[in-house]
Amino acid sequence: MATADGTSGTSSMRLAVSGAADVDQDELDQLTRELRGRLLELDVADVRVARSDGAVPAGAKPGELIAVGALVVSLAPAVLRPALRLLETWMRNRPVRTVKVDIDGRTLELGHASAQQQQQVLDAFVAELRTQNTGGGSPAGSDATAGLPAGAAGPPVVQE
Image 1 (cartoon, rainbow, N blue to C red):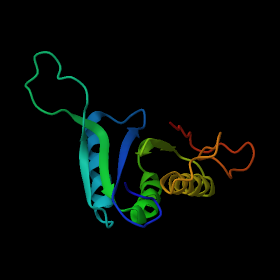
Image 2 (image 1 turned 90 degrees about the vertical axis):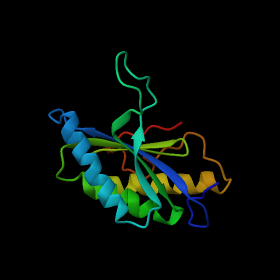
Image 3 (image 1 turned 45 degrees about the vertical axis):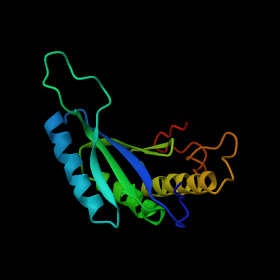
Image 4 (image 1 turned 90 degrees about the horizontal axis):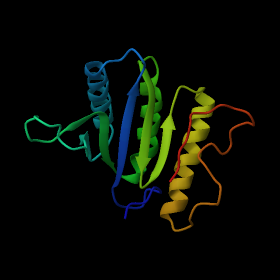
């Protein structure tokens, strides 16, 4: 199994991009392909367009359904933090509402928060992944918003 502390292995990171209210499916597809290109500039093993798990609609030709706005990234644990930082900066000045990140059942939803809040959330998320992957487990009641000032509205975070 992969570890998030940079020791060995490859992790799979699933991304789901949600466009702003005025973004149509074609524009979301274009944004997702742009993000794929940026991620490939990092030292990642692979970035694929995710396939939909849904059934083929009645009357449609058989084949794989592509999930618009979804990517699967295969990366070494050492590239996790740079990939998350890339996501954070890529979202700026684009019509993207959120990017949902899922790694080994741990989910983080990045939104438009301040740079300081985003950094605190990313640091807490990576630290939690390291704890999980080194066998230390996750402290009860912890979430990736740890370290944010009281009352700070960081991006929503969902866990297992």
